[in-house]
Amino acid sequence: MDTFSAAVMLFLIMDPLGNLPIFASILRHIEPKKRRRVLIRELTFALVIMLLFLFAGEAILNFLNLKSESVSIAGGIILFLIVMTNSFL
Image: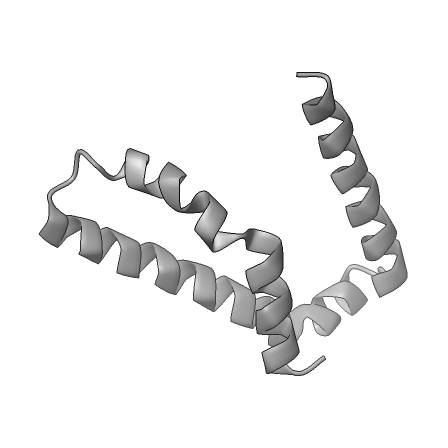
């Protein structure tokens, strides 16, 4: 998977436009100058973590003796459980 396709997939999965009201409500009590600094800091942390897993993810899975298929199945099960718990609320 190349970087562009991974970025598009993450953009679609994370839904930044849908999460925007949540972040706006959380950061509304912070002054605008500091808010920008907080957003840049947190986005930098997220970028570093995503790039780490993009380039070293296969090595981490090999170290943990996991196959990518088992991680995909586990992710599907977790998403299914999230949907099931949200549908009952």
